[in-house]
Image 1 (cartoon, rainbow, N blue to C red):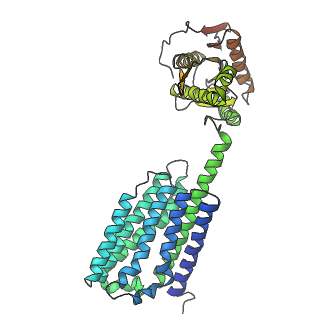
Image 2 (image 1 turned 180 degrees about the vertical axis):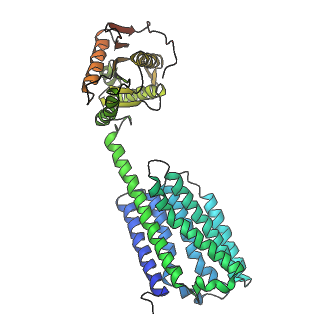
Length: 407
């Protein structure tokens, strides 16, 4: 006699799903972590309980509805699961396909059961459920393309793939090999091997989704610790960390530059328009800077109204052209805040990343010195180290035209 029979294994699955209901409710209501996704996943675990905890309860329904009522909780569970995975993976939320597949499957099961075709009804359930499981696997796979190792993504997809194979095998058996249905059910209970597979799938899906949620939380915390909360640019520590590999590449002959940026007369903006106006000015500036950056460039806020722009693989001359283009954009595009127009300008200091400076502090200090020269020279201009060590200052109205494609 086996240590665990099918009834015991179903009870274990039911207990696990009940525990997961509590987990998702705590995450949604107490910790407010992905509340909508957590509630949908709680509904998925909760709706599966009738079919797991009481598989023989179908005897209380009319014979024509018994099999339909037995499979309906599992169909609802997979529908909620598909919707919850969509929410959890932050993909485009589309409930239409899930409702369509779930509704058509339920109607097919009811019609076939009412006609006395119970085996075909089970096949219809299996086909519909496999499509819903395929939706889940697709969403997990698509979300894994961003910042997740392939091995972890494959492990997360494994239970859905196994569930799809189990459902398709069950559907095929009931349609074309009815004599082999004992591999899946014995009476009204699943076979022992089928129960073990269902237990493995349930535990892997539950633990995997919690892992996805924890990963989201870790990314969110990491993002918060490395980003300025107002402008969503890198903070001072993140800029310092981003500068380290660039300085290491300088030692191997690579050419990088950095730009220090400061909003002119920012205190006057705060005084005249309040802190809300000052925040709007900073966001306006960041939007203009980003519009003139490449994807590989990195922008950070060092504090107050001062920013730092890292320009990898950029010569000093090209960095000056980038800075001049940004200065022109800030000067020409007035901030519209409410019914008021706020004119803005900014000063720029440009320097090369120099060798023999592992931390990048000297490179930043050189760019900062050029920034102070720009402000002392009248603001609204770009100051840089010249290639021949002479001063290079381009002021408002005398910006050097770009002679080549800016990086």
